[in-house]
Length: 349
Image 1 (cartoon, rainbow, N blue to C red):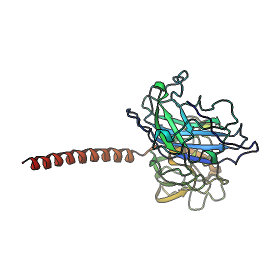
Image 2 (cartoon, helix red, strand yellow):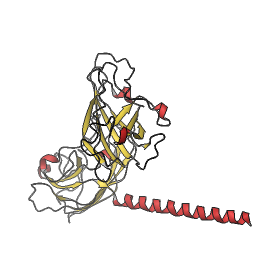
Image 3 (spheres, rainbow, N blue to C red):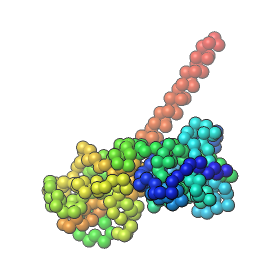
Image 4 (cartoon, rainbow, N blue to C red):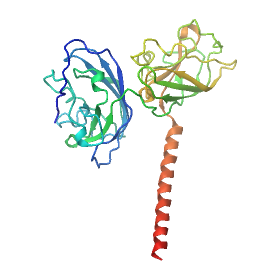
């Protein structure tokens, strides 16, 4: 049952837009099902009154209920829901509370906020789902986010809302394709890697490394200093390289006043290669999960034209490392069990 937030919010405009995060999720207290929600959420606040202030929710989640297809939860209270609750801890059911929103609102704004899961249990919400809560992000800082399954709207996962992004997974652009509409003779190939450093909406950053070929040989050191986007390599808001309009502009936190991507450039050798082994840090104010599924765009020097595009995914090395770790844990557990049985046998003797 939804509980209205017992907060008094002045009718004057609330605090300016800010960015919060749910860096991780844990199983809901007492949940014993087989769903294991993981990933992160980003919550961008928009100023307003106690009836108009709102949040925009973006998420990259796995382990969700695959029964949560489009419209599945329409007639199930809290079915497939993803909601901010009044509580400040995920340790006990009693500490989670009900839905959190301004007491000036007559209806619960969280009722219609749901995720749609793919067949693999994943859900990527890039555009953002807006919720008019009548609260500021300062109000929801420290509260909990709850994820529900379809069946009876049961609570399956919980995470505490904070102002730190968390490090997130290592990302990679495994390959590049020509930018939509580009007909020049440059054919960028190779790969890029992105490693995140936790921070808030102003300090979170990413480390970029790459090994690329087919670049613009005019991009020598300093060549793009006075050319907007000249020799640039930047993450954009889009999630597809299929059409130019879907690529969008540079992607960074709304809390930043300056575009952090402007100085990020490659330096090409005479053969069009560029191998960047040391970190180039970009203070995006975003988590790496925010960047997951977005596109990386490469520019030439002339007018900063876009020449190549690739989609960011989780690094294959990270996936292999997780598999190896799981195998090692399983092997370790088996060995521990064997040793325990041997020890018990020796005591029996």
